[in-house]
Length: 338
Image (cartoon, rainbow, N blue to C red; front, side):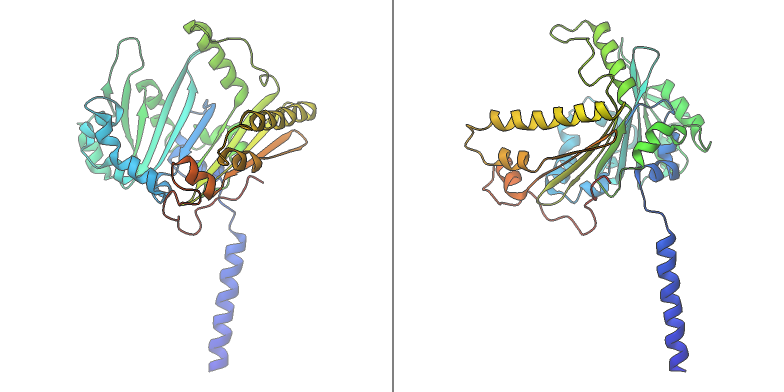
């Protein structure tokens, strides 16, 4: 009887291990495909995601989030959201995603998806029966509106973009989950990084340049930057623990010669920065710059860096080595971009 029990337990253990081995590793792309981020506009050229739930484990961030409503004053987007849905919305927030979306040939808009422990029925009651509720309108600027998606996810931004998000919801491949270029980049991001995302650099650079040209801002050049035409896309991720910061950038160039050019430029900037701080008595910047690693392979350039505890404590105004926050729980640090 004991042998049978032991054999049964072993079979269960083996089956569990095999099931775990067969499960694909989570990536930024899989998170987009499997959740409400998929409804963001397919035309998105930049995505930034904050894992707010994980960032709460970093004490300064938690304190900043807690104090944000009071600092927002009587005006502003945070106050408008709390007026519409009641206080405590930030405490329920788990993930915040910002998508940069082209509006025509020379303008940019944005759409935000906010996931959290929200009561869908209560959110819909707050809209008063409307599909989209405009919270803020300013002459000459896009409106700030809000919609509720199935499952209790909030979508925020201009009404025109929210209508797109609502149409995309539940339609596989209609939204961001159909943007192959960004998904390929996000497949290189490994959550549980607390900050992650990707930028389709070429169209983003063109949009920014045209916006500068249209605004005619003094002192800003609308000429193409040195990376435009060479750098095609960027993926990024960052992790804040209780005592350190780590980050990874993955840039893709138009060709291998361009990648070598970008890698040389990155190394040159690090060297120039070291020279600029050579007279500074602070050791923090030397530690930060010494931790930067630049590698190039094929059309890809990888940059890995970190801010060690001593440097972080010094930059925060504390004694070297002083912890900046309480230690994050195990498993919150994301591995480097492969």
